[in-house]
Image (cartoon, rainbow, N blue to C red; front, top):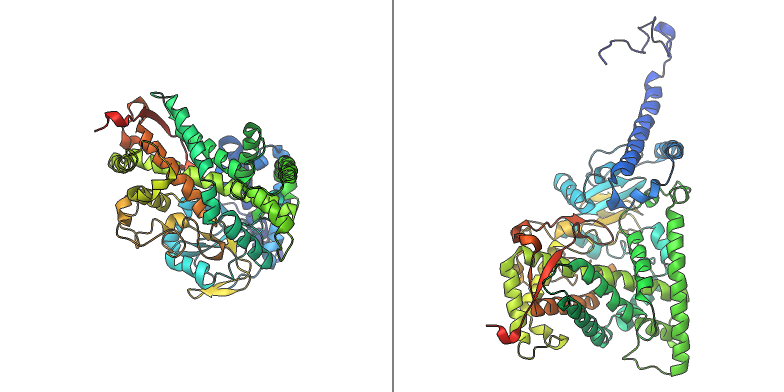
Length: 570
């Protein structure tokens, strides 16, 4: 370290790997560039692998399980191959001259290392403050732009909406969703438009959502009964909500009229949802065709897909047999699978609705119906527990409305004005999918004067947009009253508030999810007072997030329910 000995031809007695004086090797600089850089990247990658094994440092990217099963020596050889291949590939690529601003990047992996130190949506927000609300990142081999302001979001999801209406290729979506046969990931075009039409007019229309009212009320009432059985004891609030969402979604989607053991089906669905969450290293280095296999990711996805497919096939056959016996079923009691099977047989669609389409669409429903609603309710309760004044105000409103009958149902939910404000504020601070679902442009375009090459992946940071201080006063504060005199809503017209996205690729299941959220919160606030366990103060409640398919609490929310007695109230 403190030695002046060098290899540039002056230390004859000790170090002359390139010769010396007039006949010294002339390309030392070139040789060093092509040796130091791959070696540095290799060391960094292997160090990260070791960190993953020791610390699970990047669990938010779903990579922690992708390499830990590999022997370190084999991993070493794999990454030597990766580095050499990527190094040669990077030499051939020419980057556009006028990309959006970007942080300094490393060769081969680009900016991937910047996202390994914290939650992705947090880190992207920090980077956007330094480099701008339209920012370029190279993650692995792939070029991304990150959108972090309402103005930039409007450019992507309105001005250039058709161009950005495609989805990038994700291995999990390809395998799990029958080669992109669903609504969420199918390529933009005529086939997608048909699926979207089926979804909005048949599966998730207001009439259809209302037809599932009895299922929602039964399941939420069952939850309330189970909580009554644990009066005075702390309960895992998030776990109960998750089970509630799965039960409602399973009944409305595919088990309205068939017998299914939820205990066996739910774990498989949860594994499927986990597989689709986060970033996967196999998607970021698509040129390394062996990576999905050697990482074990493909085998894991195919096993999960096989298990789900067998169960879905069995359920579909049971529905077909049941429909054959019943003849024309009652449209009011049909679950979503019944609707899809009827459309397949009698829908007169432009494109045939295949069994793979049906399975993939059902899986879309399971993801959207379970993750978003349970996450929203848990964060709403967390924020109200953190802010007792807001909890008391919401509770007083619910009890004023329902004390007249003592029964909480959906008929009077429209009267809960303040509760709706609480839900909106929860979605502003805690959008279930903080980075939405990534998009991809079909053609080159310009946004804010910057060139966006074709096939660029687009990440819209809805979490950052909902906390933009240029649009929200005291943006980090939970304050439902901010919406009292505001026309801003989450239905896709106001780009400062896009928890469900906007434009053609906006989430079509918004009404379905909100029906579950509103009823669940109304029941929970009416029937119980709530307190934190072990004498914990409200201000001490940990609100740290954990990244996955949706952003949940890092620590479980434990609460103690205290039954409310209307006759004793006042």
